[in-house]
Length: 423
Image 1 (cartoon, rainbow, N blue to C red):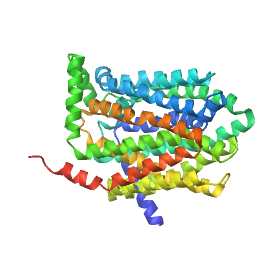
Image 2: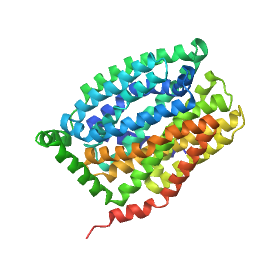
Image 3: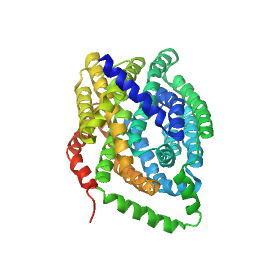
Image 4: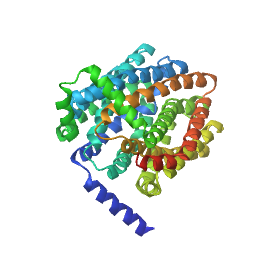
C-alpha cells in the first residue's frame, strides 16, 4: 500500500511539472475563486427561501439563468476569438462573478435573484475562453490530469464549508450569507486581476485574433455551424456531449435542491448541513488523487460507469432516507463524492479531447447552447417536484444518472468508430 501511494505521488508530481504556463497559473489561482464559491453554495437555495422565494421560484431562477447562458454561449466563440482568450476571461469573469456577488449580497426578493442570475450567466463566455486558455497549449494526454487537479483545487476549498455552518449558527442565515457574498466579491475580483498577470495568450488565440479581424459575423456563424457539423461526424464527440449534458442536468438539480431536502425534508438543523460538503470534499480528494488516475488507465467507459453508478446510488439513498438519519445521509454524501470526483473530470477531458483545437471555440460555443437548451427546464422541473415533496428532485437525479450509466456502455463502440480512419 505504501509503495502504491509513493508511486501515485511521484506520478502526480511529474504531471504537475509538465503542465504549461497557463495550466499552472489556472491551477494555482483556482482556490481563490473556489473558497468563496463553496462558502455560499451550500446555503444559496436556502438563502433564497429565507428571503421569501418559494421552491418553484428557486427553480425558475435556475432555469432563467440557464436560458440566459444559452444566449451568451452562442456568442462566446466569436467574442473569445475576437478579443483573445486572456482578455475575454478577465473582462467577463469580473462581470459575471464580481457583479453577481454584489447583487446576491444585497438581494431582497425574487426579482433580485433573477437579476443576479442574468449577470452571472455571462460566465458562459468565460467557460469557452477559460477552457481554451487552460488546455490549448497543453498536450492531449495531459488534459485529463488538468481536469483532475482543477477538481482537487475545488475539493480542497470545500473543506472551508463548515465555517459557513458555524457562522449561520452564530449570526443567522441571512446576515451570514450577505457577509459571505461581500467576501466573495473581494476575493474573486482580486484573483481575476492576479491571475491575469500570470497568463499569456495561447498560440491559437493569437492566430484567431489576427484572423477574426477581417471576418464578418455572418461568416462567423457559418464557420460555427461548419465546425460543429464536422465535430458531429465524430461518434466520440457525440458520446462525450451526451455525457456532459447528463452530468450538467444532474449537477443543476442536485446542487439546487439537496440542501432544501436536508433541511425541509429530512429535518436536519441549518447549521449542521455544512458537515456534508466537508465529508463530500474529503471523499472526493482521496478519489481524485488515488482512484481517478487508476480509472483513467482503464478507459473512459469504466470511469463513467463508476461515476454515474455512484451518483445513482447516492441520490436513491438520500431520496429514501428517514428523517435525521445521519448514517444514511453520510453514506449518500460519500457515494456522491465518489461520483462527482469521477464524472466531472472524466466528462470534461472526454469532451476536450474529442474537439479539434482549431475549431474549439466555435464548437464549444455551439455545444454550450445545446447543453443549456437541454438542461434549462430541469431546474424549473426540480422546483415543481420540490413543491410536491423535497425528496422528488433527488429521484429525478437518480433517473438522469441511470441514463448516464447506460451511456457508458456505448462509449467503447463510439471511441472505436472515431479511431477508424474515414474513407
